[in-house]
Image (cartoon, helix red, strand yellow):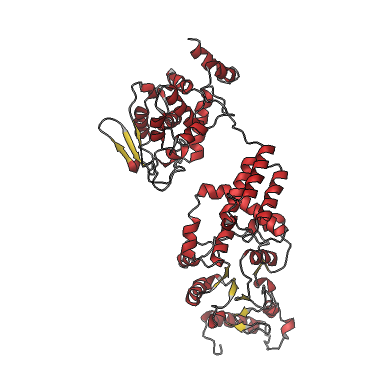
Length: 518
């Protein structure tokens, strides 16, 4: 049938022709105008939904957060460009240039939202031209271009909200919550500011490592409040003056924030504005003294619970090592180890079986290869030792050996402490803290006042009350001087009468009364 090379089409043509002959009919060709041709309708319809773009309000926010203005849009058309000039992939009557890969990016601070299939080529062009700008990309960590992306980053990535309004072919107002999710953390802004001041990306990385993750989390909220304050008052966040910073702290004060929080906010500002030397500025000192006098930050507790309460609890038959299941053994071991080491919960979470040594005398040594809160240059607790104790019900070594045997069948990683429920992953600091507080509650200690960290004060105060020399305590715990112990940890131990007030209201009072009345 004609010149067709398709057997399928040839078959259908034969069948149609046979049906026409059977009906003694005719087939004729007739021109149908394109506008009336249903088969051609889809190709003639212009679909602007194929022209995707980042929502313009999000783009404006991103542009306001960087240290220099975007001056070109590299992948756009007249329908989805963010700014002019823009570069188009194909000839466009309004474009500045055709084909972004054919021009130099070196002198531009660009905005690029390329097709994802061109991301590797885009990153290679950025590296070749040593260009700087904003790139929109999916968080596809397994893609071949992802390592190169991480290598070229000069600031922390900003996770855009997963919302239908983020990428759209039509302009839609964003809700405040979506806009808020676009704003980067204060430390991201600090990183960008350091880069703008001329520091290399590698140098900025080292500078940013000068703050621990816990410090960054503590400072982040106040740096973000500072950036919001600067935005409302048209202040350059990284070029502010002392009066402007004190105005910000005053705003915090009248919002009801106390001395401790304002002091943290001041430290956060000192981190991003080192040239102001807020810590030594005499006006700032007077201001902080005024805050303290108005809202003094006094110690929450004046005494500490007696470790005897916990020891007595562990002497009960229900806490006998032979009767303990995994949950109770985990909780008891955590308390015994933290009281024995006189340390923070962070140390327990860092204990690793790979760094454990079982000595001939029955003791256990753990090498500490992670940074602790107290770690400073020249001062690091590299080893923590747990020695046997004569009383088996209180011996940390006996319970440690039992715990290791009980958890040996689990598909564990190298962490010592595991969660006692499936999938038995490494326990976090918050989990271990919760276990300790549960034991303290069972011992009749008011956990609304005393947290897991109170074990450090309780254990060291107990040692001092037993006549151990303060210098020995300081060396054992790792404090640099006696002032730390005297100021924060050395507390008078509560009497049995004081503790019984809480026991009488405890849901476990029956257990305590049976034991203490023996």
